[in-house]
Image (cartoon, rainbow, N blue to C red; front, side, top):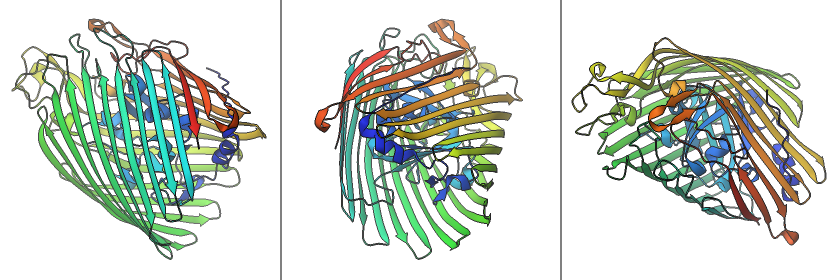
Length: 634
């Protein structure tokens, strides 16, 4: 057992921290597409304010998620260059990322799901919904949902201006800059932001772990009157990074990759006497270029995602509410590696919320999915919560589904000669899973909450990569005899049993001293009927501890977060790579508020213990790094 005491202090955040994190048991969330108190959902949820990005020693949103209880972030490269998000084991494609009600997951590969083109200062809150949620959100919500709600798209129209500036520089020629501007009136909100992170990175085999990451977005909201509101956003994310052994364990792999993402979305909301009608539309373009080594021709992949959804929520009476809607999406890819493909998908869904008794809440969801590949699927879910006084007892049962992405179906299919690596499989069946969980939450006070959950997930046809000899490959037209490949396959049946326990504490101790702490422990046991365990299924941690602690005291600040993982050890002698059975990673940040509200200066130390570690075999993570920074908030 690892015990940590972590403190963070900053006078400018004292009152704000107390206000943001109070009432831990009665937070109103939108995880069911309509507002509901957390204790009434019957689900295990974690809610984090977006401002925590600036309070913790993190550089990207995926690094922030790394310290949220119950989430495992498998990082590749520095400053959040690329990451896989895992909730409750399984694979990274089984976590759905939502931005203001719209799906973000890329049709090319789940490796880009953590490429979130939103400036952290624009985020109002992040809701992490653990467990099956396909009946609400559709395909890919198997392990859980990352639901991001931004300030511009929220229902608040607060008058005033806001500005944030953050600059930092440090070892390995690392430098970062971030600016956020917001102006608002009674009817309009306009935000503009830009964030840029750069590093030469650690020395690697014949190269270094460089990363150049840039995010910019503009958001606008307009209230025509009390009932009608329009929200709109355009955003871009440009990143260029070292990708050595991100996807292979070959000695000849000295890869680099460029991923450019363009994102736009619009939302129209109509408030009615007893309900709310909302229509969301989004369009995403992603251009991925991957060079296996300097002499190779790049894989050039261009994907598009069009998404539209309309739903209506009716408050039938004070104890019952209904939400119903339609959803449509179109996915496209043009690729010199995977070929050209298109896929249509539609759904109709309905959800009911009931307060059966004073403290008893029932939520039912039913979704009918229609997909070009897997046909029609019926996805039910039922959640029940009993919340007398400070205790909440809850249970949830639901079915989820996920189809293969374009990489899993067609990777390396369009090349003339392939001597190794990952091979897609067009004949993959869709995944399906049943999830059941029971939980107990206890609110010791408005400042102190403890959540505990037992869950069981039974999956059929889970998609992952399995080592396969040439002679056993279903298709050999462009393959080399005698070679071994990683083939996308269906695991016949996979069972995951787990336990989650997390503690959240928030309190203003005195006028100048406030504290927030979160600590989460997750245990996972995954068993497969197949004799050969696939790659990503065997990569998730068996034990994980997430820790974050933030607070304030007068003019000083000190923050610290940590993560401990215990997992299956692996090695690859060809590249001298070793995946340790466990590691403990922590980072800290100490600062001082300058006089007359001139901002603050800080010293940040990432990877304090200089841990040598990788989340995935072959992808070496950065060593200890020191940074000096300045931040200003208007």
